[in-house]
Image (cartoon, rainbow, N blue to C red):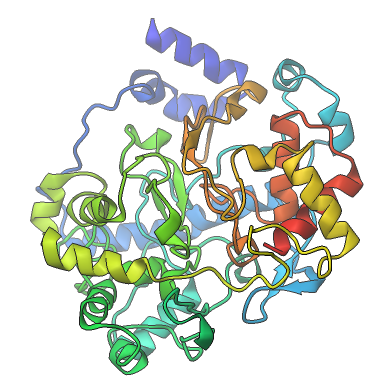
Length: 468
């Protein structure tokens, strides 16, 4: 019965016949339950053969992902005239999600979820965003980060099978500044550098206590990971020392490195992850987009023991799991992470609201919408703009399930509320990075929550969030 029901869903979603012929039988049997929860440990194919095969397939895989992005989004580099990130990188402006022919956001907002679903009018850019190669997955870094780490430390984070897919102008500034809760008087303490094992000591000796300095050392120390290790099933040309916490959370912030969640099986249902910032970690009470881990210490242990290896402890044993000591190492890492502060927001008062003497009329109007008609403040209350809870947005009410580049677009389930303080520094948006701009994000919530905001109200919301 499951197979018949899934085949019916595929047909109703208008998946091309050729794709059904190639993958339909497999999907019908595996879309709800994989054949196994485990990755293969005893690899029979030699490394050179694996690398040659995957290198040969790379161009077609990346062309497919590029076509998907161009179908969904306007990818042009259009900077907002009066908005920058903390160190000056331009903020991209405008709604970039493309609509079906003849449709407008206003027309779409007038339809019910059932009408949008039945007429297949839900914008494709609001569907879950697949990983660049969903069947393969794995940690994937932007080129500018790969180049800097190789320059400083000699480690090569390039994969032979895949490159990052999003244009650089939609990604966070690099390197991002570092603000410390213990030394707000200093402002950015990064000195414009990417913190690595090569320079962490010279940058922070004298600013941190010995525990925190040791915690930072561990955060920039490479440890083996699923794709970056010494085994024959790695995805690097040479055996790799591994990755560091700060390879994704560069300078305690983010660089749009992406991955697949380790929690979900089968592979088609695994969510793409957009790396969140660690700024303001001291006020957060949930960790992991869906795991609801209750402390950063729990999260650190989980990452090292399982998430680095797609949640598979048998693979972790093979590739070199690093068991951190909870009472010292994990504690030291967490202590440093808890010092990472939000960027300055000079227009906010002591309660996290706009100071009327400093804010523009548009920003003040946007704040009113945020806490009123827009209902944003229900989940994102001041002063830090998170409720530290999880919520199910139920966007699946607007579209029929479908397979998109290997990703089964269906229900996402509950997702933790992310912090909005400093949000202009953290594109792209949503847990999977499907919204490239704040304007895209406003349109998503306006549609899914059926808010019926005016263009003026939408623009005000964006202006307010840029001031946070």
